[in-house]
Amino acid sequence: MLHNNIWSGMGSMKFSEITADQWDELSPYLDTCLLPVTGMAGGEKPYEATEWLERLRDMMDLIEIPFKGRVVTYPAWHYITGSGNLPEMVNEWCESAKRAGFRYAIVVTANKELELACPAMNLSFLPNEDGSLPAQADVSDAIRSMWNGQAV
Image 1: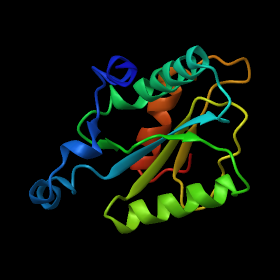
Image 2 (image 1 turned 45 degrees about the horizontal axis):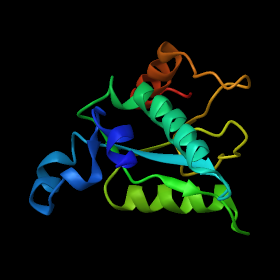
Image 3 (image 1 turned 180 degrees about the vertical axis):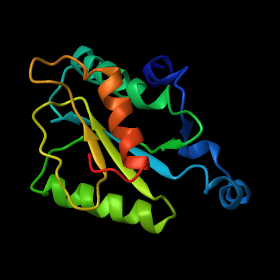
Image 4 (image 1 turned 90 degrees about the vertical axis):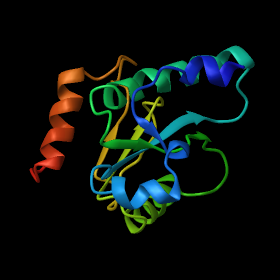
């Protein structure tokens, strides 16, 4: 139940809404994929997990709502525990998304502490140092600059 309440009403196209028949037709327009990374460590209490998901939703709204029709949102990575190298894993995911037909890969997280830098990722967005959301105008400008081939 929680999942439906938190994710309902979001703007971009979800991966699950695209059929095999539609992909060839839509892929020229849906050139950007969004990978949400919640950033939980695994020991969160239920209300803390809800707070993490709400923060991630708020971050994703900065991209999904203004860019509906061009961005496809993939399933979120909720937990970042283990001995894996997160930037390496994110890089592999971005490379895979590009092989699948996306030109751009954007990673968004609710965790301001995550190190996400990797060569295959085009952009990443995380909360400011004080935990607040980045400015909508800054996010939109960065995405438009990326699409226009300008360094961001």
